[in-house]
Length: 371
Image 1 (cartoon, rainbow, N blue to C red):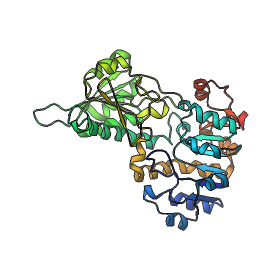
Image 2: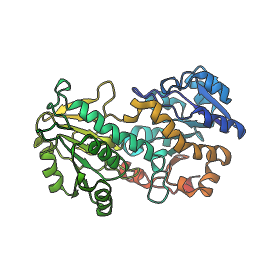
Image 3: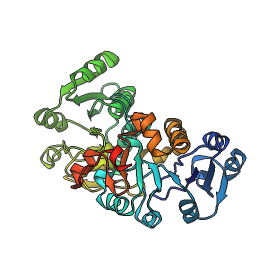
Image 4: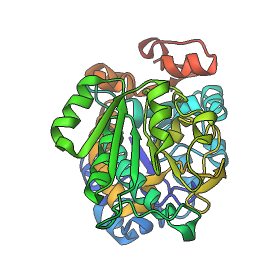
């Protein structure tokens, strides 16, 4: 199979999908790998390293797209890339289709096969999403801390506090991978941390892990609203795999937050979990907007800011399946590796992930039928 690695062009997206070691393995397996020149530079990977690994460097993105059977990316295609879609082309990347009806329509109309990192599922886990969730959770606290400073428009709070002054209050909604990573970062800083989730088993486990360093609350509107009233930083991480994120933080709740507080919406890729961030993704160039005196951070590719860490962490997770798909083709790969079945979101003009079909009004077609 011919595999293409284009340069990411989303705003400040510095990651690249394939590291040289994986390119080398694909070449040894008999595949051709095209890499767009400069694709890895922002992640600290030179063109020469790709050539040494056996890749063929191409000058133009259009050549990478048009000559490849499988496009191996990091982020969902942007509108300027839609012209490259064609029937049978496999796109293996983060897609977040439920939050992007335009991209979904283009992929359906052109008959491309879209395999989404974020919905590949092993048991209850999402192994291709996990490493980026861990990074995004940690960075949510890092970025939230930055914007709490007065010079950034925040209330002027040091989350750690100092002797004689209480630390800042961090409220984390969602006790999954991103939420746990955020709690780890916030507890490490010495902040007061409140974790909110509907999963009592997860809250119990985190209570044991962090001991008396966190407070836990069962997730309902009353508890979320009460916690937010005293929050300096809110990190919302709740995710329903492949579906639009639930809107858990209402405008009325935000009104009750003190001015200068910060909300970081980690789930913005799936549409956002607050009423103010819904449909308002920001970028690393302009990461925040202000509503009700509160700073809202809704950058859609948070891990892209730490590309050298993120690229290697992501490729470590996704490489297994790009090798499988390239060797077997999609139909045989999903038959042999059933965790890939939920990863296939669109195929041959059909929507094959039920949550996407339900959210966007498409007829759902099982993967096996579409392939």
